[in-house]
Amino acid sequence: MKQFLFLCVLALLHGATAAQKEITVRFSNDYNHVYHLALIVYKPDGTGETRVSNLEPKAEKSYTYPAGTELYIADYRQEAFAMRGNDIRKTGVKPAFVLRGDQPRLIVQLSTLASGSGQAPNR
Image 1 (cartoon, rainbow, N blue to C red):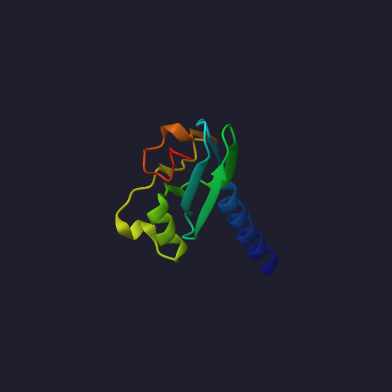
Image 2 (cartoon, rainbow, N blue to C red):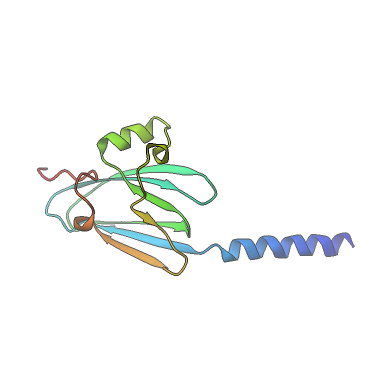
């Protein structure tokens, strides 16, 4: 009986992790200058992270996250706010992207992002 219960729990856990689809997001710098990309990420399990990088012209950066992840493209002020351990969602700002399970990959040209999203045009 214990073995049967253990196998049932194991099958449920496997089903839950298999149902969690992974989405690859690729950011591509199509500008002729360095782009300061600051991502604030909140995964469906509630964990958050801040990823900051400078992308050279024609450079790409890829990340893989589970479906339901919210991605915020932060400006310098929002980046500093998040780096101090604050939750940017409490400021009322909306995510730039919410990753969907029917979308195995997302390619983002940095020029398509709204101005003020961390991009420094005169660098």
